[in-house]
Amino acid sequence: MKRLEGFLTYLFTGIGIGAVVCTVSLAVMGGMDGTLKQILVWLAASALFTVISQIMCMDFGNLLIRTVIHFCLCFALAVTVGTFLNYSTSWISSARVMLPAFLVIYVIIYVGTFLVRLAETKELNKKLNR
Image (cartoon, rainbow, N blue to C red; front, side, top):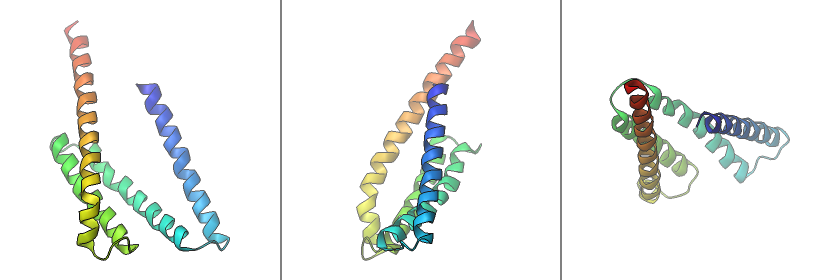
């Protein structure tokens, strides 16, 4: 599991750095168009998603409480960005469009995280009982 985590960390770090370098390069070279504007806005939003995700590492409440708070903040940010980029006419209409996808994604993430933590707890208990 640690190998996979290490690989994924390097993979996403590389993608993140590459995306930033590529985006800044395009903007500096005069490639600012509607697509690049969207990329820049979503890139900034991604940085904020990262900050918001620190909630999951904090030591308060349980996993469900932290997941609900994380969901609310990320959902509000995504809907705000979608509205800013004129994906729909209002914040409410953006929220209606994005809510089903967010719910499905968060249920999958929550269940996956819960099952991994459950397996880790069982493994730890086995080691402690030996």
